[in-house]
Image 1 (tube, rainbow, N blue to C red):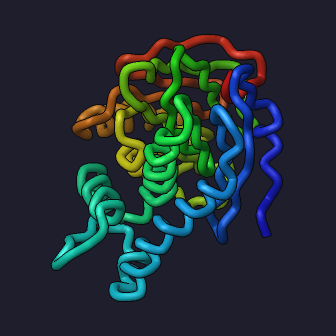
Image 2 (cartoon, one colour; image 1 turned 135 degrees about the vertical axis):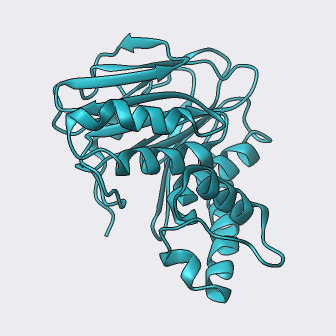
Length: 246
């Protein structure tokens, strides 16, 4: 069963159309120049197939919470997940949602000049103007009240969110939201999980940021816990009016 993601009703990009594609656990919400449901479904099946095939050969790949070492051939999406996990110090499946969003998004750019792919709070984007991306932080009073202005005009960008209080994805911490900006969606996903795992209380925010900023390839970090926020990096923080993307 797929839980209704009510915050997606608040997503708006005026010059683009939006559509939803669900394949097993993968639940994508996409903005593009035109409806591309069939092509997106084809791409999701393709990249999920690569990951599922690898898991069938190496079942521990799906379960491990530690960085994975590849022995032998592996699809590029699996290699990206593994490399992201190694950099962030987590298992490769911590990067799977971001990796699928990124690989699907990159391929959709052959059919649409602008693409925004959201997969469980992990966002890949390539747009022709800077985009407001709000932070969804559950019951925090800061949830959907602040966000970033993301410039992906020259090259794609990613912002991924991990939470210890929202959603079904595994987090060993208690932060309402850990958002990570990067050019790599798989790395941002893995890093958000890694950083979030270190946050049990508000006093852990500075330490978690110190850990995160040492992950090569991370451009920015925002951590929300209750009414407190910690920030690091090249961030353009902005107020938002209850919109995840506008």
